[in-house]
Image (tube, rainbow, N blue to C red; front, side, top):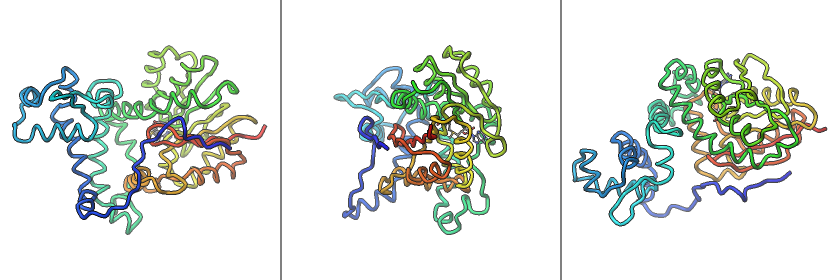
Length: 350
Ligand SMILES: C[S@@+](CC[C@H](N)C(=O)[O-])C[C@H]1O[C@@H](n2cnc3c(N)ncnc32)[C@H](O)[C@@H]1O
């Protein structure tokens, strides 16, 4: 087995001992960074800078801000890394340009607002979840996919955010996994097929399927047509809590298993192991916790899953290996991917 973490340097919050009382206060006040970003979105900072860079005075005028806080606000955004300041001119940083301008493909601001809103109650009740194990106290629900799907605007925001996350992962998976050995794949919970489309464009010999809730069908068709891969992409509408998953040479679960109870994760991997031919592969990616359990962002993502979803949490590559081995797969690779993700690749012996 190989563990590859050289080609992608994952942004990692390096653990360091805190020895200053102000550092403790800053950890407790971490929400201020979130509010800074959300305020910038609300005020239209990124959209305005997308039209033209500007000085603090110009931006203050263009956005109708009061001069009192504007300069510190813009400098704080630059210090955070979302804006860039060159002399006294501010412009969007590359990530803000790609992901924080409304209407642009890859915009995550809508999803951020939506998740911040529903996480507000959940994350605020972290202590309660830690006592009871239940998200939202007595109002435990699942990650509110069904709620999101009922509202076309939220669904579009959700899809745009999924595209951004798996849009970073797709090209790496296309490049680093050996697709020449396979002729088909199916992406379980593949949303509107953004990752599938990337794999199909990179590997013209492949045929790809996406299994997701039926509501995704028309969105997938639109995306597949746009990318010119409609003839090689198949949509399977269903519910993986009820229906058996379809087969292919490679079965992918991306950002899916972390929302499922452990027995469902094991069952889905076992189904996938049955659904692939000898020599076929199962690829699981999620924002897994590192085996040493030291990377703060993924640990926080795990707790965020727990306050949103009754059985959700992040798990380690070692956990995933255990489920794969139980299903008769041999773990061949562990790949570090963008978007804080790790992929575990299991192969069915030939
Ligand atoms: C967090 S998204 C991940 C999307 C994509 N795989 C990615 O990596 O960005 C989870 C996906 O699983 C789908 N999903 C959730 N529950 C499902 C179910 N019971 N059956 C089929 N798909 C489901 C959702 O519709 C959504 O598209």
